[in-house]
Structures are given as structure tokens and as C-alpha cells.
Image 1 (cartoon, rainbow, N blue to C red):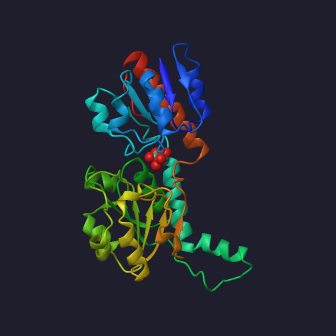
Image 2 (cartoon, helix red, strand yellow; image 1 turned 135 degrees about the horizontal axis):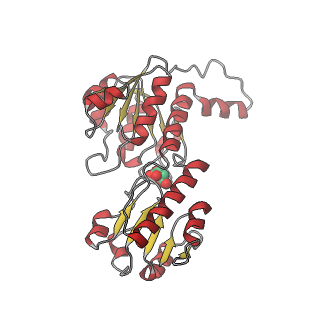
Image 3 (cartoon, rainbow, N blue to C red; image 1 turned 180 degrees about the horizontal axis):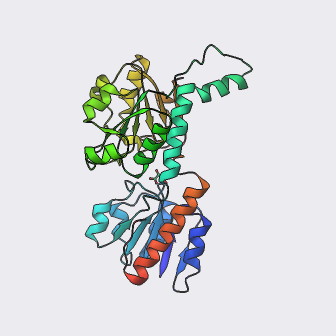
Length: 310
Ligand code: MLT
């Protein structure tokens, strides 16, 4: 069985695959789309992170392909319907990097509240600007979480530890379950209007694209702060830019962008927006976890027909 590793995979996962005598691992360094297209017809499985786009067109010439493994959570870089139509299974590892994404969300929320990156930059420039960086506490502030899945649930728990009031919206979770998690289930409109901080933890789908837009922004409290460690397409970036410039939104912390990298985005120029380059899953532990999980899942499927999404 030949397995093509398209994006960087932690050595722990590679070692699991290489240790199997029935497996040949092809792991070219940062292969171009052309190289992937050339090699894929001879492969039984491919492993991707977010860099490689798995399109219907690419899959047309993959007669041996049985499984696409996403070493991570979001599968929006894979045309899942096209894969399914060809009988190719798409699997991801939704639990394996949840802690990393949730902790990054908390890091951004705190950094946003207390202007940590801006203050660092100011000191690098030789200043000692104590007055300029007056912040806000998280204590007793209301956090609105959109998406109470694996990541949203950890964020809720950590926010409760900071004694925030936590509102949650998730169409797949009942108010009772939300209450067990210490949160209050609310309709989206209520979440927009009551939250001081809003964080997104929902996949990017046709329904959630541009979830934060001019209309929903206008329903939010003046001074709201927005954190996005999920997917860039969830926010209409032009509308967010306008809302920040007008002062309606006090700030935003963005790990993800509609186009990555977000070259030329006017958001990059706003002093009250802080950024990281899609680092949600970038912890050593998360990369070890996702690589091991996807390697074992792929072997289980190819060798034993067992389907798991860890
Ligand atoms: C994910 O979906 O797992 C994260 O966004 C991290 C990544 O893209 O690898």
C-alpha cells in the first residue's frame, strides 16, 4: 500500500506508517500541486493538513485512492462530496488538536483584552506607554461561544475558570447539555446582543460562511471583542474592518483568514486587531497527537476495514 504524505506530518505518525511492512510511505518535502497530481494515481491513501487542496479534479485521476486522511479537524480543503462519490473515505482527527486550539483561543482572548502584542511592540520601539494600554478583565464579562463541540467545550470550561458568564449557541446541542457544561444556551441573536467577547468554534460550511457580517455585527454590543481560531470564511472581513474603524467593535484577534496568508488585507493595518498565522493546532503535543491518530486510523481502514475518527 502506498501512502502519500502531502503536508508536513510529525515524525511520530510517519514512524507508525513506516513500521508497517505492507506500507510504502512517499513523503516529498512540501510537494507542489503538480507533483501531487503526478504521484497520486499510484497511491492508496493520502494525508493532508490544510495546505493541500483536494479538489474533484485532482480525484478524477486517483483510481487507487481509498482514503484521504486529514491530520487535523477542518475538512474544508477537501471536496468531500466528490471523494464520497468515488467511494473514497475522508477521515479527520477532531479530538487530537482540540486542546491546542482551545488554549490558543484563550491566549488570544487575554492578549486582546490586555493589548499584549501592542505593548510588546511599543517597548521594542523604546517606549514605556503605561497609559496607552488600559485593558479590560475577563472576570464577570460575558463570553459568547458559537459552536460547543470539542474545542468550544474546552474554551467554555477555561472561561468559566476565569469566572466569565458563558453563553453558547450550537444547533446540535440541547439547552440541557449546554447547562451541564456550565453555559447558557441562547439563540444567535441573543448571543450577538449580550456578549462582550465572541469566539467562533464552528466548521466552515455553506450555512456558516460569513456568519459574522454587517447584519450580525449591527446586533452586537458596542465595544464587543471578537476572536476567531476556527476558519476565516466565517467572518465577512470587509464588514469587520468597517465595524472596527467605526468603533462599534473594540478589537479582534484573528488566527484564520478568508485568504491565507491575508496579503494586502486592510485588517492588518488596524492597531486594535491582533493576529497569528493559523497557529491554533501548532503545539508539539497537538502535532504528535494528530500524526499518530491519522496514521493509526489509515492503517486500521486500509488493513482491517475499521473506520475511526479520533
Ligand atoms: C484544523 O482544522 O485542524 C486546524 O485549523 C489546524 C490545521 O489547519 O491544521
